[in-house]
Image (cartoon, rainbow, N blue to C red; front, side, top):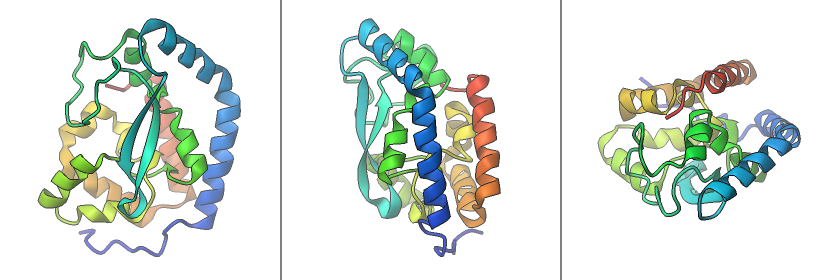
Length: 202
């Protein structure tokens, strides 16, 4: 249905301006929260505060994503192991920040750098993308836009997204790419706020 998704909306100027304004304002407003989470991560588990991992972005270009570390140092490097409820690799602080998606706040720096947008498909590891490119038709079309801090799939929560499977998630991503506009982005942001408040995470 979405095999021929139009690429005429790639990196639109209005979206970039929105991304910059929104991310800078949110960083300023949330700066005390950044400090609090960083201190809690540092005090409750060994390892770096920030978790870094290579992901694929616009046109499958690799970039380094930033997150607050919510798992024991060294966990989740491969990205293929599913994190289950009560997974002992997740720290006590990690359970809270992952469930509320606050672990993803450092990705605002990726947005400011232009590697991500506020709204878009979830950024994925190359190993996962390689598997899905071989099994899911038109999977490469999801890279016609930058990955997002949140998106139409992400607001469903991590577990729900996994239950839906790659093909159904791709349909949602391609629907967003085809229909994206400011009003749609604002609706997804609203749903994201509800998801965070309701703690629909891992």
